Length: 577
Image (cartoon, rainbow, N blue to C red; front, side, top):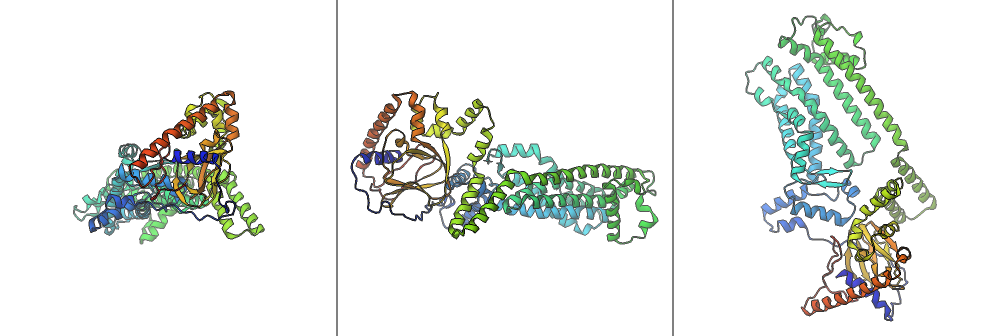
């Protein structure tokens, strides 16, 4: 057990030990994460054609390590591996929102949605029914998208949780988007294809294609995910989004300027259609589709900017539609002004401050002529620091009342309090004070958290990341991952030297509790330190007995575990400490 090994190694320092001569020699560590068995191959182990196809499909549907959102929100290697294992073992039929397949599929839907929003109003207005088969194929793909939405996980950015439960996903999708999606994707062309070759009949049925405008909402959602994937700047994306919305509104309004008078005349909704603008002598001279479209676009733009009184509006359908466009245009102007105001306000946001800080940092490194590898490590640290959770927690909790701050901090540190054995024997009245002394620290890959031969003076709890445990001779013992801890003996045993070094294998964030802060907090209980020391020795005695029985069974490796959900990785041979 890892706890036993670390405790024994700390207490063995009571016996004089001759340390290696090169103990204080500066060593450049080049540590790497151990390769793990492929869980997908374990699911389909045989090397036949069918299993190869299954493995290929599964790898495209699980969490992608190369996805930028994965690297931003799921920082540690252990958390990524846990996500993949849970997906394969529990939600094998689901598609991960950060998977390669979902990224490809959403890019395809973006292209098809843009194409359909441009094509469909043009087809139903100007009778380009040779495109009806293309529209039918696009709607079939939209139906496939609706089906896949019931099997695609959902990422909650507010809680940083990835929901893969099918019932929750289906409930939310039906409640929010299912009805607009099914109306916009209903393949009415399937009915049109079996009708007589009559353009008037087609025009009636293609009226249902107007619901395609509902796909604009899906387009915006997918574009935002596309922006996150490709790390497009917020300003560039907002300009692109507003441009698409404005162009779509003008394009549909231009087509509907023609379509509404035509369809009202076909359906005999008006007594006469001769007063409509499309019946004027000027419009009759425009005998090409392009000229008609330009005339409709000009009329729609004037109505949208509030100039309907300059138009020749006589028929009821013209009056009502241009009134609608005028109201829509006023709302659109308010939307555009609000969006530009938001873009201007981002200049003073926290992200903008981070960008300025990054620029200053880059200028400083260039001025000091720091080596390239040091610059790269500084930038890695900055990006990790700017996104870390503890920084945001401190900003929020600093503005809370003392009681509420204590409640929030205790909840945030609940895993630490549950996993560390010492804290279970500390009175609950002083636990909040102990937690208040926790400090967050960040270590990059190959940084040394604890060095063999130094005096242990702190407890370390891993929030995210992976560290390796090495002997003084630089022999690897095991790995520690999320929710693991070490150094707890140093809180109650004075002047204890470390026999192992702890080195970060990837960017790692830890909580650190210093010995003097811990002792200052529990000083109100004079006998508590001696009690904790006694409990430590008793646990060591029990663990030694277990280890003796374990070795007597002829085991050739030590099963290393720690408290908590994450476990250290077993080494293939027994470490000799």
